Length: 160
Image 1: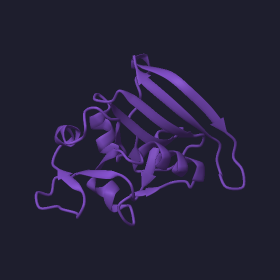
Image 2 (image 1 turned 120 degrees about the vertical axis):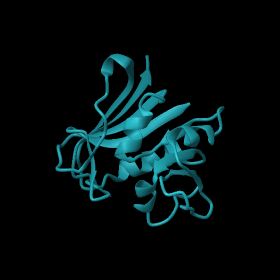
Image 3 (image 1 turned 90 degrees about the horizontal axis):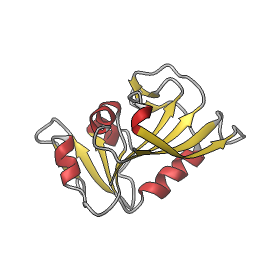
């Protein structure tokens, strides 16, 4: 199963200057819980935005740079090659960035979104979902609090 996982603003903003636009500890915890012990597929810039590889996950990095390598990671040159390098009998996660999300939407079986209920100025955006192709199965609202500056919802969609 291919699952896209992303935190997305009301205007589909994902980030600016290769950085996240918000800090939501509950979203980070959900991401960690869902992706731990799985393969995670990402573009090179997304990978390089991390201070170090994320623990307990197999990193599959898509890069156009033929000589790109990182110890302990699988490096490929296309989304198709990334998907084929993952186990077929497990859930595998697409974690960004914007271009990888656009390319992967047609391959996804499931989408886990953290919808941040605010709009942001950004340079990277999540593709518009064609809701007629997706069934919303889970919607869990969270109010802003002392640790979360914005209201947000955890949404899970499955392909119809």
